[in-house]
Image (cartoon, rainbow over all chains, first blue to last red; front, side, top):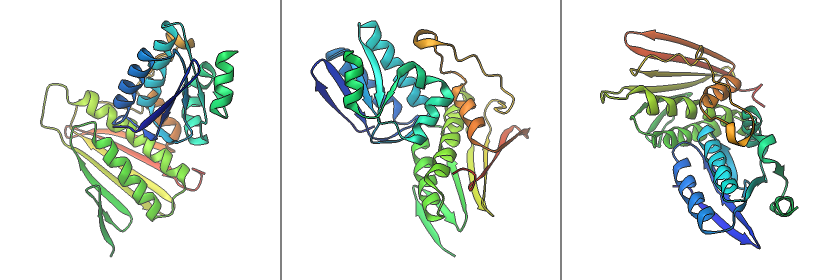
Length: 113
Length: 152
């Protein structure tokens, strides 16, 4: 299991996974994210402020969540990505696809724009 | 000699030895053990991150693909710190797989075409300073080396 909190701010869903998204926690992250995106707003911010670690299994969940949001007419972007985690996004070429913002507020503003 | 048990791992001074089950939950146990080992030996968070990422990706591959169709799995991990260098050895009796020479598929452009396959191996190659693979007596043996000081 991964601990994840979330918040709905206007028409934007903010997901806040905790600490470590590795291949043993990615599945529960995916299930919770799917459920929240299906039930709630389709504009999604994943706030990585509390995330210290991500593997390719975690990246896969970010990708599938983004596709799910997009196919429902929404979009996904990221905030609060620490330098170690950002490096993983950079190696994968994901940083450019999703866009990265310092704070969830900036990410929410980007989705509204 | 200090001997501490954490997450089922035994620390004999500068060495971790773990026998792993063929189960994805073992990745969490390895990451816990590496974090504790790294902190006990003053490794930087960056060095711990890099080592964890490489081991996570490799063990995930083994558990996901190496033992399709047979249950007699042996997976062993050894991690040793010596003179500022981490030497790790991952041994398994699964299907032959050489991550050093495996061809990586194109990752694809854009959200729709983007693929994940092969990304784990790319991350391993990016974060380890040296990788040596051999197949010996029915076992994959992958040696990894990481200089902890250049890991930042």
